[in-house]
Amino acid sequence: MVIGRIIGGSVGDKLIIRLKNESNVDVGDLLIIEDKGLKFYVKVINKSIASLVPGQFIEEIAGQNLEYDESINLFDEKERFYQIAFAKILTIDKNRFVPPRTIPSFFAKVSKVSSDDFKFLEKKGEIEIGCLRLGTESLKSVKIKLPAKDLVSHHMLVTAATGKGKSNFVRVFIRGLLKTEGFASLIIDPHAEYYGSKGMKGLSHLPDRNKIYYFTPRWQEVMGSYELKIFAEDLKPADFHGIIELSDAQKEAMDALYKVYGEVWIRALLVDESINNIYDKLSKNVSFATLYALRRRIGYTLELEDGESGLVFDTRKREGTSIFEKIRQAVKDGKTVIIDTSLLGSEAEKLTSAGIARRQFNFYRRTKQLNPDAFDNLPELLIVFEEAPRVLGVDALRHGTNVFEKIAREGRKFHIGICAITQMPSLIPKEILSQMNTKVILGIPAPMDRNAVIESSAQNISDESVEIQMLDKGEAIVTSPFIDFPLPVKVSFFDDLVREDNSYKRGGNPELVGL
Image 1 (cartoon, rainbow, N blue to C red):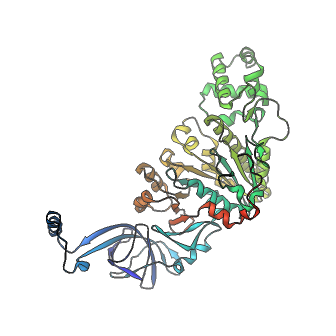
Image 2 (spheres, rainbow, N blue to C red):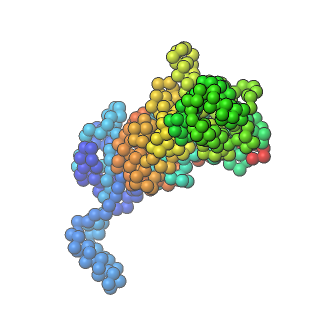
Image 3 (cartoon, rainbow, N blue to C red):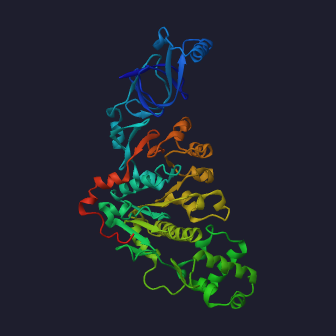
């Protein structure tokens, strides 16, 4: 159905479309223009009202109506007063999809899209995240699928204001990864919202729950889960670098302690040795003040309740297999690993996350260097973490580089990607934002955060600033160098997908007890 005609525009700028008065077109709508054997896919980025009547007469007519409360009867109203849409060309179908280097002619017909116009999208990837969005409506018959291999190793940013659907999108995406061979994921869960419970649907409610390993301090309450317990003898000074605030003297003291005491360096500092003995054994190269400050700092970070053990960290001798080894094996087997850090303080949570991520990165890197054949058989790994500025923000990186920054810069070489989730992308340095090639934008009201995402995107979305501000819950724009154009998406509701996957046919998950 024709809803408008082209009346102006230029390459690289906007097309100007005069709309039929009865046409229902919103910002974000997708339209089709067929002209000279080409099919132009365009997107409405703004609207205005216009008139052939000079402005002074419009003001006079409006004034009379206000003063005398008279109805307005205009001659040829439909011809003289109308709406204008401003649109950007997304791509051109010229037997293959190409960037816009030409524009349609004057008076070219503009039509609403149909599902047939977007059949090609269903062949683009494996991870189904929702359906094509047309402004505030959606084409449910056009499923949006993302290419897993490209997206995972080249990093993702998921950003939105509170309540817009960030966690829902991640659950939907991980569901797709669970159905795709050759991938593993590691989810740092600070809000205990990914695994699921009796009152909240999570990944454990999917039929693929056998691919999920759940590590939690509440392991005794959740049948089939694993205890989240990290022994101090498995920690190294490098785990603390760039994660907690340390002076150069304290970093040097940690390295010296590890050199003298080996794996029991933390227990020696906190439990077994006096500061005087440590001072002597370190050949008096570290000051008393530094050692006392370091003892307080590490003790605070590990949250030791009785001086020796706490909810997650324990200075006593490890028994059995290290948790790091268990996670490494699960990742190697292509599992989804969820780490419940919801009961930890900020410092302990960051140390836990960094320690786990650092060992996965080192394992992948060493395997590639020492055994390329084995490396080729490793699954691609996606590391998901919330509140990304805590470890990737400008303030966080003042403490020094950390494993998350290193993965952002080097991870793609080793088949490791990050999925950073944040409300405030402006707090992350531009050079790191630009490394996150795929951006899932679910509504950002703050201009500073919108600009940060727009300026760091692989595709030009500068014209979508108004739309980004107005996105409702579950509405997204996905921009990536691995898709033809920025995709407007209505993200699926995870609970609906759980029902579609028939997980309730077995009466729910009997393993979820006491949560």
